[in-house]
Amino acid sequence: MTDTTFRAYRVFEENGAFVRKLVNRSVNELPEGEVLIRVKYAGLNYKDALSASGNRGVTRNYPHTPGIDAAGIVEDSSSPLFNQGDEVAVTSYDLGMNTDGAFAEYIRVPADWIVPLPKGLTLAESMVLGTSGLTAALSVKRLLDAGQKHVDGPVVVTGAAGGVGSLAVKILLKEGFEVIAATSNLEDSREVIEKLGAHQHIDKSETDDQSGRPLIRPKWAGAVDVVGGNTLATLLKACKYGGNVTTCGNIGSGELNTTVYPFILNNISLLGVDSQKTPLEERKAVWEKLAGDWKPDGLDDLATFISLDELENYIQRLLNKKNRGQVVLKL
Image (cartoon, rainbow, N blue to C red; front, side, top):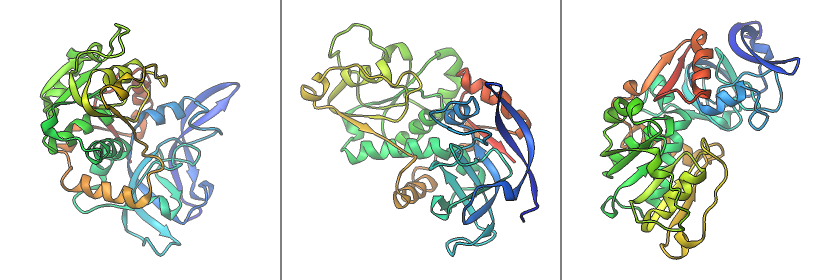
């Protein structure tokens, strides 16, 4: 296998600028790891776009192949956990960050990064979900573990037309919640939100209070936030007594300026969600839920499937915040 060549989307640093190219590589150039996987599908995430742009907070060293989500077939394994021909998925850990990632026809990774493909999911469906689906599912799990109930009232989801948001909407609906979908452009995202089935569709301005007040009239009983910044502060101060707010993203801002009043007067809980370092056993359990009770209906309708040759265009769209729904690379 060491002389096998394959195509990869590679990012180079040249004269202070970052240049992206499709290149041919050899399997023997891949990093060390117990399992060699032939990639069949890969998810496209905002973190991938940052890596492709030379963001040192995501990827320290170049040249580099982005792609934090991969699904494929084991080609070779020195681990007793996996055999040639096994269908598997890899999401997060260091894949696509500082380890060559999924925007290539082959990856090689440690065995303990890999989840066997759960029954009930195809390889393609696992990448429609990907890190976004895992993060959405972990967010809903945090709400449920904190005692959030559908009888308490509606849950608002920010960035509801995007990857994590759209899947959080679908999972919350599976759990019987009334869901409010907040998006940045009502008209552009109307069709997407209608397909998701959310009960209400609101503009992001309703989750961006500018009054300066520490608390405002309650509008929801809980929230799943991917935006951060003032949006997260608004979700906290407009949350019903005893509610829970999860935070898993910062596409708006990494800053949080708020007061203690939502917490000490309204008993609000702020719950952090991380998918990158989620322990393997919890990760497997959540994937089983995504393949079973939480499997969103019409997964294929949530995704746009693209080729390696189209990847550059979709990375630009993602950087410009023009993507709607999931984008999946088919290799």
